[in-house]
Image (tube, rainbow over all chains, first blue to last red; front, side, top):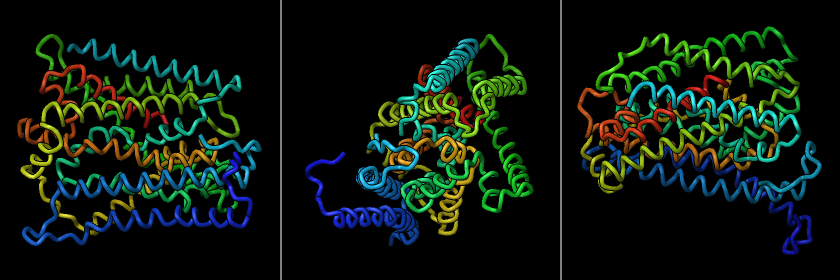
Amino acid sequence: MRSPLHPVFLAQRAYRRRRLTDAARLLPLAGCFLFLLPIFWRPQDTGVADTASGGLYLFAVWAVLIVAAAGVAAKLGRHESDDTPDRDDPHGSGMG
Amino acid sequence: MSFRILVAVCLAYVTVLFVVAFIAERRAQNGNIGWLRSPVVYTLSLSIYCTAWTFYGAVGYAARSGLEFVTIYLGPTLVFVGWWWVLRKLVRIGRRERVTSIADLISARYGKSNLLGVIVTVISVAASTPYIALQLQSVTLSFGVFASDAPTGWALPDQGATALWVAAGLALFTILFGTRNLDANERHHGVVTAIALEAVVKLVALLAVGIFVVWGVADGWGDVIARTKASPISQWPLVPGRWIGLTFVSAAAVLTLPRMFQVMVVENVDERHLATASWAFPLYLMLISLFVLPIAVVGLSELPAGANPDLFVLTLPLAFDRDNLAMLAFLGGFSSATSMVIV
């Protein structure tokens, strides 16, 4: 699916692809950090974290992670099918 | 609601599953696969991670230990979000080596060692047998809920007999659509499609109960949060070791459970489906667990003290005379149990 918007320079495309894979690698680490962050929560008044706000925080992180993963996966899928058609599937159709 | 209706609905549901699996199989044989190999079906089939344990157990878990239940879903979320690290390679190796099970994969890494394959197979069988028993138990338990709830008319049928009939039906299904076609690439379109359908049913059922609980019983999210603060699980005594450990174990489980391996690697038809699953499967998990805490909290506050929290998903709608909703919830639990047993 080549659109006229894509740059002609291969190096630039390879560069973008590498940055995308970097993002794909980084995402789970960021998610890991954010999910483990509540370990350090110690509210001053009670000393024990609160279920309601903790739940809101976890689900917010979860949602952000999903949106970010969707963004990376969509872009990566487009690059993948442009640059290196899958050996098993010579048509290399775009992802659904 | 009579037990007869319950059994009739179950049978009708199983019949639909058979028909769907049959049609999918037929279409695959004719080479007319089309939507059968779409990333959506692949993602939905992954949802066998959520068994009856999730469907009933997560609420019970949340009612006992609060937020800790999400670790079971955070681990897989991280694994799928990080598909580029592990899953991509796993699927690629699985396809190149024509791996058909996790035992096959591990033995393939060590020069197709037969002994190693046997050992891994024995471990998997030993580990999944009690797990399957647990699923069957959940089905019989949920039958029991409806039975004890019925005013008069019929006695609680023998639980062992119920479990046996359910097991026999599932075995028939598995033989018909699973082991019957042993081809080299071991892909079972019928089973996968049926599981995808069951995934939709259990998600819809849990969401329906959740929506009913949040906006029907409670008064929206604000009320749920207020109830949470007042409930016995208002505090979140997070033990770092448990939190990290459970997340790690669930992450490992999603990679190594035999049934996950089957749908994730063996039934994978296209590596690009992983890209979609990398966000769609975490989304599924999030939607599944979204209403778990509200159901637990509202169940704790509305139902009598001795009620089994593992069955809140069923007993809450029943307590408010929503028989249809309870039936849907029952089908959801039934789906999650059966899809796990089949695979």
